[in-house]
Every structure is written in C-alpha cells, then in structure tokens.
Image (cartoon, rainbow, N blue to C red; front, top):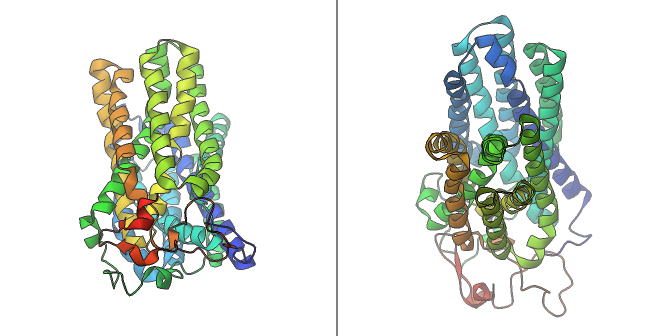
Length: 443
C-alpha cells in the first residue's frame, strides 16, 4: 500500500488526526478511573474481592457496549457511535465520582461503572472502525499508531491519577473536570470523521459471493472472524496480564521491592508504545501475517525469559521483548476485522468481544493459578495463548481494498489508489473473508 500526496488530502489528514485524538482520550478516560481505585477502595472500605466485583460492573457494561456497537455503528456510523459513547462516558464517570465522594455506596458506583463501561465498549468499536477506514484512505498502515496513542493516553491518565491521589483531590472533582474536558474535545474531533463506507464499492465486486452486508450475528459463523478473534484474544491476554500481574510477578518471582516492580511495568508499557510506533512501516513492507508471526515469537521468547530465567537483568530484557511482541497483535486484528467495509462494524464488534474475554477471564484465572503454583508459573497460560495467536495469524491476511501487491510493487506502478495484483481474475473472495488463488499464494 503506497502513500502518495494525492491520497493524503487535507480532509484525510484531518480525519486521521481526529482518530488519533479519540484514541488518546479514550485511554485517558479509562486510566483516570484506574488511577483513583485506591481512593474508591478507601471510601467503600472494600476488600479485594469486593473491588473485583466492582470492576466486574465496568466489564459487564463494556461487553454490553461491544455487543450493541456492531448494530449502532452499522446503522448510525462510527461518528455517531463515538458521540453516543462520549455521553455514556460522561454520565458514568460523573455519577461514579459523585457517588464516591458523597458516600452513596457500592451499588451506586457499580451502576455508574456499567454506564461508563458501555461507553468504553461502544467507543472502542467505533474508533477502530473509523480508524481502519482512515488507514485505507491514507494508503498506509496507521492502526498501530492509533493504539500507541491510546497507550500514551493511559500513561497520562495514570500519571494524573497518581498526582490527584498525592494531592488528595476529591474523586468527584477529578472525574467531573476531566471527563467534561475530554468528552468536549472528543465531540469536536469526531466532526472530522469521514464516512467509513467510502471503500465499500471497491470491495464489493461482481465476483464476490457476499453481495450484501452480513448481520452482526452472522459474522460469528465465519471461521475468519473466529480466527482473528484468537489472535486478538492471545495478544490482549499478553497485554492485559502484564498490566494486572507483572509488578507482583517481579516482586514474588524475582525478589524486587514494590517500587522496582512497578517500574518494570513502566518498562513494559514503554516497549508496547515503541513497538506500535515502529511496527507500522514493518507491516507496510512485509504484510500483517509475517509481522504477526514474528511478533508472537518475540513475545513467547520474552515471556519465557521472564518465567524460566532466574536473573533479574535478563528477566527485564524478557519484559522488553514481551512488550514489543505483544504490541501489534490487537491493532492488526482490528485492521483485519475491518478489511471489508460491508461487515466492518459487525466483525470489529465480534473480534473486540472475543478480545475482551481476556480482560474478563484472564486476571481471575491467573490469580487462581498463582495461588497454587506461583505467578510466574501461572503466566504459562499466557504463553500458550500467544502461541495460539501466532498459529492463527494467517487469518489476518489482507483482503479486498486492504490487499497489497507483492513487496516492491509492479513495474510502472506509480502509486495512487491501492490496487490489487495484476492477476485479480484468479483471486476468489470466500464467504468467510479469506482469499484463494495465485495472488494470495504469493504472500
């Protein structure tokens, strides 16, 4: 896929910038809640188990948002999806902040987090659908950079949360001021979103057996959707398990103190961000499948070093490799799910839902195993799922308008709109979204 000046029009650049803004603010909103969990726990006097139940409220809302997002985005578009999400995020965070500060109790906060989680899930699908379309409009791989912006937003939100904790800023004021500001900017940014269906005509051809968009339920029957879901599940578990357990794994498994264990998590997050920034040109040059396979291999090697090598410096090197390897799986999975604009909303919703299983089931599963075999041993479950993601990586192969000619292009190719290889007549687009024929075999 070649980027040329003719494709990067001011409208496209504004669209891409707007998607960057929404990704960043989404990460900032989520980390704002996470950064104030200590104050929420103190306000409720809650046990660890009760806090787990409280977080479950946000997870329930997120699954609801993901489930309905396919329908909402398909009917109203990604722009409207982000607008609805911003309203839900604002309502949920404001109500949660007031409930914490005024002592309204567990149930009130739990309800607020359902609304907040719904907005988060809806925003997740909406911004990924629009981001994938903006990526096509720009003519080069951008999705990992969008997710890098999300990572930067979470770092900023966590930092502001830590500062608010230190200054003892009331949770209500922190949440209200921040979410109103972020939602206002988000609503302005989405006015620059373009129609994500602009490539639908390029993908829908007379030879395609899928003449009309599939429903959000029918996409679940596609093997390619499930295989992309495996990729996202494995890589989301690789990312989420580090966020939840890496500091404790370094403390309990490698003997670091609390401050050093937290610092290692920062190293992991920095490696994730670097991997997402550096990965985009690699995807453009080599394609998704080779990069996914190498990423999975790097993550497996890094996690293996952390688990099996009893040496702190080498374990930290392993953490860096783990972060680099895990950085690209989720954004590439989102891009693959959105390759066909006719099914993009439904497939992104389905794949994101599968990925969120990692965030729901991963922490308690690793915690349960960690009680019996230690956290380092429990991370072996992540090891297995990363391998599964690598084995399923072929499902992320570029199709339709996202397909690229062989590396280096054809002689006389001067760029412009992305074009399929010259032997398109031999390419067939199967009902499950996979491709066959000589052009697919060259990858």
